[in-house]
Length: 400
Image 1 (cartoon, rainbow, N blue to C red):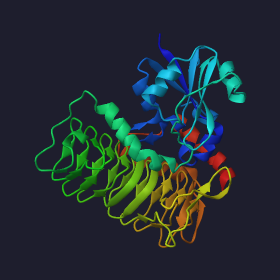
Image 2 (spheres, helix red, strand yellow):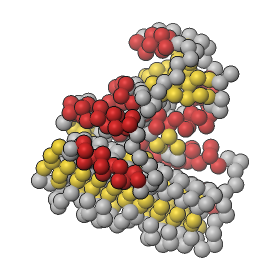
Image 3 (tube, rainbow, N blue to C red):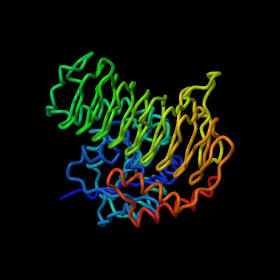
Image 4 (cartoon, helix red, strand yellow):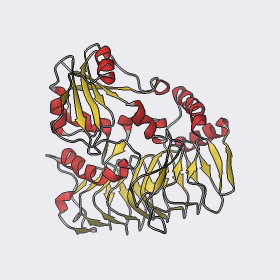
């Protein structure tokens, strides 16, 4: 019998992960080569998965409650041992875990929705998982953990499989066994350096000549690397992304472009974003002081303990040519940035403008731009998507 697995969002974590969590359950965050959900799917082969998330997303991401469920915290990064312990839970039992950040969390519950609600409120009688776990609780955790997750995912995805041979036109540095090329990928005249970590090239990826890649790097299916691109460790391109210029420790969720010269580092870019030619984003302050980042639930900039943090950009946002972003800039959903000078470090969702200031972006204009961009990839906005973005517009008013 299949495990009916419900990946549940913790409300406080969801809010802390805004603006990236506006448009998706946390389980659909990309970290490493796969999403958080896909990591659980790799270890629980007999699982049937659904989401327990906020109401306005539930139409697109419904929960499937069969009475006897296995609830798993969506922001926790799965491991083989963790999955075995979670699946072994008895009905009516729950499992706690300690994160590497020192927080004790509810990891899993087996039972009914009532059991889940009871253990969410009180942890009496819970077992405790023996290992510390990695979890995505801040937006910067995505790029901070990405390099190690590429290595972990690479081992899981390529074990017992044989990819394409590496064409002789490439320059290989390090162990060629740490370079995996899926079917349909084109890799010619490229420097592939696997001496610091693996390089994963997904199906139908096109890496153009003159590019230099230093692992750990993951290029997911149908992504494109333009000529002469430099990609440094800890970088993941999600499906159908197109990049050029210089990227260092960047995660792009999917269907987004940074196709021209310009620097992007220690950054997270959502889906359907576009950074114009010459767009650059600082990831280090001139005085080398600690970075503060906009935090939605606090309505203010909070200390991060980081020295490096670049651009955090949510879905369907765009930046015109030669846009310059200050260190640790947070851009919401559906933002259109243009003009000279540095825009402010926090840009609210559904706004347009630049250094001189921002105005509200009409939803008709947003939907028109989104539809045009998605049509280029053969995609379209559903009626459910329209309702989701209208709901986000209302919610985002509370965070301006």
